[in-house]
Structure formats: structure tokens, C-alpha cells
Length: 594
Image (cartoon, rainbow, N blue to C red; front, side, top):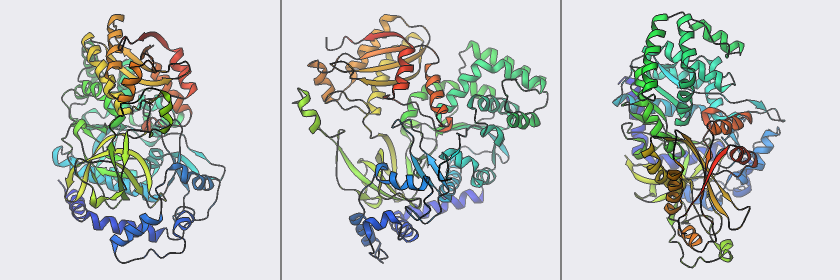
């Protein structure tokens, strides 16, 4: 490990050792930099928060400024988008706004983006690379096969540039500096990353990844989903890619002039390489592409991507492509802020934890306690009086007071103008790195499936689908993707789970999958409602191949970037429901509780 890598780990060890004090100084810095902004003035007035005692500052700040959500900040962000240059949230000039992916809550949200976002991205990239290089050392000047994509950029009516946070990051000087600092370079030029057409970008990423094949030391993307999509695309187009490598040409399907020109500058005819790849692909095709990545990129050491939360269902397919290569989970962050770094890259994605970086934002944690479901659920009369999910809350605590084994919701105060902002992520404190907590991501807190008095989260749905897959996997078929919908158009309402499958499956087996999933929901409100028929039998709908690609294309057509796309696990959007229902080819109703 080089001296730069040792230096950045030494820096992190120091701030982690003194995490409580560093957090208080981070809060002090945020409040000093943003003193007098309109949002803070609303709560703090003219009070002087410049107190010497850090613990007193924490107490004063949290007693004056309430917890917030995006709805509280939205009027201020909209004024920024409309061209209001007054210091509303921060004194830092906000000339760009980030768009959230929109796949969690069904619509994209504007959030402030400043230079601080690019700088923290550079910092966490260098820190994470240093921890990875301890276990998987890479050589200087080698390549990353990186499936990254820019989204559409546009100007708001106030002249503020808006795009996904990854689009801003890839366009920043810090992104180029990151490659120079970690001495690993992406295979694709900017013209491919910023082409604006994800299919053309994917083709070029794969083509150039194979062109630089011997130099590629790891395969990466923002989310695991993007890697899966890229290799599913490769399964269909590898012959054409081989032709381009052999002849030093570029397929006519790459029609964007800047993209074509940049790739053709790199390519030279290489019939020997093309012949080897053809042989390998013919063999891989017979083996259903098992071990595709190490076969085609023999010097790759690992796969690197976000693999937690909604990405976990893709791990089976990713391991299929990866063969024996380790999967290394990328770091924990959101459009709002980076949160934690993976300090143990050898941990499998299912067990990965993230050490909070105490200089990035000021963090609070709302203790959450899972409710014991009441047994008296018999009718809809109680529904309006129930909490929105199965958690009871205590008052937020600072980072220095979290406890191992306790679940929390993350709260952020950032330099970019978010104040006591509820992130909606549920995490568990799994341990400590020095004195900073290591977090295990549990789920998004947002309730996704509810018909009556039932309450089921994305995590609950994922566990239920896994039970169904235990039956499906015995057939040799596999699940491409899934989503769900709470159908209340007719009474009683019921859950619909949509599956897209690769392979042939008997209807009897699919009926068993449906029954198993229905019987596997453990939420007491669901169980009681099913027994009393106030929720109808679960319905499993099988989709035609390519349905989830249509869902992806809908989001990309509305400005999302493939780099940030996550399949929505519960759908309420009518356009998407029409796509799903139009593409349904089989329906099964559960016989559980009959």
C-alpha cells in the first residue's frame, strides 16, 4: 500500500477515534458557514449559537431546530430552482441541483448540490480504495470496467442546472482527480459516459472493456443492477462486439457522432483478440454465462458496487457472472450525503457494515423499536389510528450515544443546507471502528404495501419473494426482477406480486410459489386480515420477457440515469401499472388461508 493510502487511513483512524468531538466540530462548522440563512433564522432567530461547549451546542441546536423532511425544505429548494439567489439554505452558491432517482417514492426530488458534494465523493473514493487495496492490491495505471451513465441535464426556469447527483459527479474535476489519485482509469471516455443513450453507452463500455481486457483489474458500477443489465445486454450482442474488435470498426447502432468518434480513436483491428473472445463466449453460452467476468477479464480481482438494500435480490445473478471473484460492497451514501465507508471489503454484501465518516455531515439517530402487533385487528375502524409503520420512536441521539444492536433512522445536517433532515433509512449499529459506529443497512423506512391494517416494508417483501424463489430455483428457471402493488380497486383489497422469469416453469410450481409467498408474510395485521378475509388472496402475475426493461426505459425517458436506477419494489404510478398489466401473461391466486 502506497504512502497516500496510508495517509488517508491514518486521517480516518484519527477522526474515528475522536468521533464525538469531531461531530461537534462538524456541527459548529455547518452553523458558522450557514449562519443567518433564511431557513435557520426561522427557528433560531437572532440567537448566537457560537457557544464554546460542544455538548451545549448540540443540545441548543436540537432544541431549537425541529426534525425535517423533504416537504419542509421543498419550498426553499423550489425558490432556488426559480432563480432566487438569496441565502435560503446555505451561503454557498447553489448553481446546480441534484435529482433523486425517483424510484423509491415515485417522483424525483430536487436537492442542493455544491462543491462540497464533489469533494466528499473524492474523499470517500480515496478512503475506500485504500481499504480495498489492503486486501486486493491493484497495479498503477490499470483499468476499471465501469458501467457508469450520465442522465439528462436541464436548466430550471431560474437558470439553475439540474441533473442526477451521479451526472454532476462524473462531470466534476474531482471525478478525474479520483482516477489520478487511485491510479485506476475507467475504460470509457467522457463521450461514452455522457452520450445520453444508455444502450449506446453500454455497447461502448463493453467493447472498450474487452479492448482493454488484460488491463482491467476490477468491474464496477454505482448499483449492482447496472452490471446485471450490461451483461444481459452482452449476452444478446457479443457477436457484433467481436466483429468490431476484429475489424477495428463500430456498429451502426452507435449513431451519436461524438460517441462514435471517441471510440474509433481508441480501436484498432485485433482479429486474434476477437477470435479468443468468440471461443470464450461460445463456451460461456453453453454454460449459461456462468463465470463470464473472470473468463473474459482474467486479471479482474473483484466486483465493486452498491449491493445492499434493494440491490440484494440481484446478488444471485451477479455471483453467477462473477464465478469465484469476490463481491465488494461499495460505500453507504444517498443523494443527500455520503454516510459511511466499507472498512472491511472482504465481508460478503449480506454482512457488510459501514463506518460513519464524522467530518462529512452532522449525524443524529432516532432509536426505533419494533411494535408488537396488536391482536385485536378485526376491521378497518382501527386503521386510521395506527402508526404508519411498525416502529415506535425515541428522541434522536448524537453519534456518540448510539448502542450496538439498536436500530435507528438516520438524520442529517449538511453543509449543503439540510437541517435535521430525516433520511428514511433504517440502520442497525453492528459495532464500532475506533469510536465511530459501523452501520448495517436494514431497509428504507417507507411503508410500501398496505391494504387494511397490514404494514409491510421493502425488506418484508424481499424476504417473502426469497421464500417463493426457494421453490422456483428447483426448476432451473430464475427470477429476472420483481415488483408489487397493493390493489384496492375492488374489495377486499389484495397484494399483487409481479415476476419476470427466465426459463420454463410448470403452472403447478408457480401456484406453489404464490401460496408460499402469501403464507410467508409475518406481519400480524396481514395474517389476521387474511384469516378474516379483509385482505384477499395474494396474486402472482407472470410478465413477458423484457417488461422490466420497459420500466427502466420509462424512468430514463423521464430524466433518470441508469447509474442511479433501482427497480421500484412497490408501484402506484398508473403509467407503470398499465405497462405491467399489459405485459402480464399468467395469473395465480394463493390458496393459503383457504
